[in-house]
Image (cartoon, rainbow, N blue to C red; front, side, top):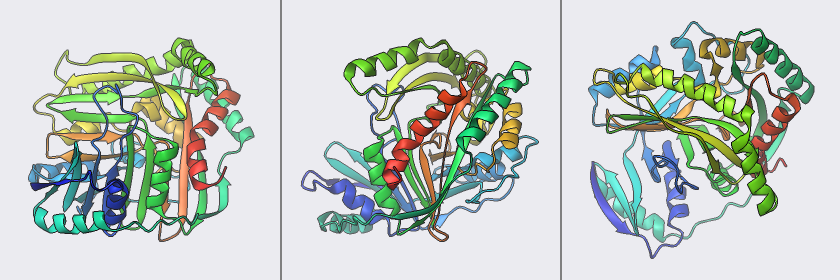
Length: 428
């Protein structure tokens, strides 16, 4: 790809103009990282990618993706990995009902990527001059604001409070019996959404819940609108990075209360135990791809503050073995331990048994390949899934269950995590 720069200081609404312009394409990825100050190893690169062609993938999906990437080592790709890819990695199944049944994996080839450097935007394309003219025109146009609110109807909570508490107690019994140590248990919400403008919803969600791995993905008529604060896995300069989140506390109303909540999270034995279990699991996952002795915990129990919550985040790194392909590095760690539990395979079997809906894309990942040897992927949480063809809308929230979990408190944590989504959709 070749590149051209455009000076943007004369266009105060450049970001909104570019987002609006991108929506004409069938395939779009938008990364809008916020609240990234001091975030270890950075966040997503702020960019917009548009395209007209997705790559053809078939089962087994990871092998199909690997073949494509090896045959096209310089290609950039944007797309998602769905949670149910677990079934091709282990003897697992996904038989619960779902309102969204998207392909387990989807990637598109960008025709144009717009990134930012100081007061300039950078256009990368095989024909950057063509896009330069179109983008200049888009930047010069006034934006027609669509202030119409979507009509959200038939909202269904798939698990009520009593059912949730009963299930948490059953999961605690599994833990007491030594079946598992920790499990991520989730609640599903679905609705019909009429007149929903996905681009507008993304902008509102970013305002309500700014996050380092916020992203928007359009794959034809299917949309993922994400305010994810969590990185799943990154590869750059042969270094693998994973940053599981385990541990959540609400923001305080006053500065004093906020600092107290943060302190309690930092010192909580329960939250530290949750985090440590997943750190150990991630170390094991990365070791499958790492040079001997290179797996390292860069930071443990780090406390980071976001608009809605404080989070406990740990950072694990490793140096990739030369013979391990980049796609296999992802495959060896998928799905992420923070959304499954420990031991991972048994936890995933219990998730299938006790959750009453299919996760599908939720707790999967959005990300990109920058050629064969570089990628970055988030964890699909705090996200909305929308099918424009059927008007089906879906979001899910969950929390980690350990033996010390209080079912009522875990339920309230789920409601807290759903708050920004429901505010954005006008459900609150």
